[in-house]
Length: 220
Image (tube, rainbow, N blue to C red; front, side, top):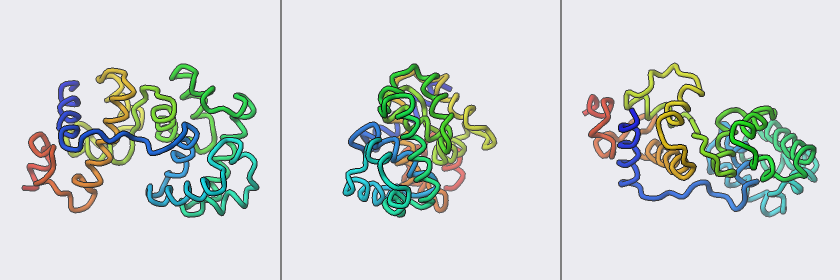
């Protein structure tokens, strides 16, 4: 299994090259983006982040100091803006209550401790927590999303009914605990699924994983 996971990574890396995720200027911006991207496309998140940047609010102090209605207006392009505004301000309140307003202090804890604390925040599920841990904190915590399930289901490595932690363990238990590797692997999965392994009308004939993909061979 480890050899196959490595082979998938190598084929994707050879095709796409380095992707250098996550697009953000600070660890806190990563965390904001991870919350805003829930149930929406990244293009919508970019518009919301641009609004926050223009307002000078891409920081714990900035988010914490905004009136709720003003924050909702700024992040409206990301959808579910009332829910996400609440989650952002609850996160910043937690940071001020326990870490002097610094996300970096939370992320300086060991992986298990930091992950448990993030998961204790309202609206922060495993995918959001792992995105913050990996991309903001540099922790080797593999991120699982819908793209991961789709790709590895078609590759025959998932049955489709596994829970989040079981899918995460597929990678965590078989690959070196390396944040750079996990970062690049997840970015490659997303790029592969956006371009080739699409939900509808996948482009199997041109896919770099076609030689090792049962689904792709069946569609030829």
